Length: 334
Image (cartoon, rainbow, N blue to C red):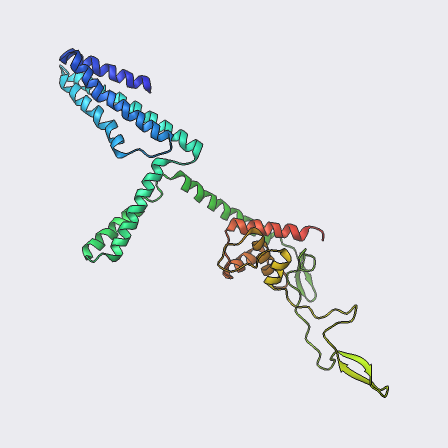
């Protein structure tokens, strides 16, 4: 690229020198190729620093060689050499643009960001925000309609040339496809055992989980069998007195469902709140609570749906990772 630029400058010098002399030729090369070389170095340095180049620099890379090209074309003695003289100064432009383009691609590969694309995207978004505000609030109806049309044209340019945005969108689609395939395979290979009293889905229940998230509801009380304690009065007559809150050893009281607060306390994490950012441990607690909110326990799809419908926040990837943690905890020995 550097050799191409030098060859273009030498060609311009020899062409102009044959007609206007050495001094004029040297001045033409300095004003055309020389100034273009300076702008090329500026563009290269800004690119290597990860900064966008000003519009004046990019315009100068084309305008200065174009002026030298026009001057060389005028100096040509015939039509055939006019074309050659006119194309010779453009070698510097090609060299400068090529070096800047290669440097920009090196920076994008090493740093993962394109300063030029980011500058263009920022300009488009800024203009879009301005025209949307003017379309909504400007007192003149014609101005509002004009800004409305301009904003739709700008909307087509949002994200154009942004390779990082495209990569992130592909990652999102990959996660969705992976999740869908995981859920579909889980539903296909779920084992259901049929008994006389109805189907029972094979799997671990809340009792075998490391942390018991929900227990079966308490049995209906028998109004004719109130708990009593045996005692005797002063005449040694057996009487029945109501039992206190304590239970004799070896007798289990009626169980109640475990609340989300209790699960959070057992896991030693703050209670997950709807609408707030949750840690990975809190997401595991919420999934455990929702999974065992019904009997038999819910599947991944049902639990994830309940997670979102309940108002909790968390990305699909984090929910899937938390579900994998929950399944690993269930499969580990107590």
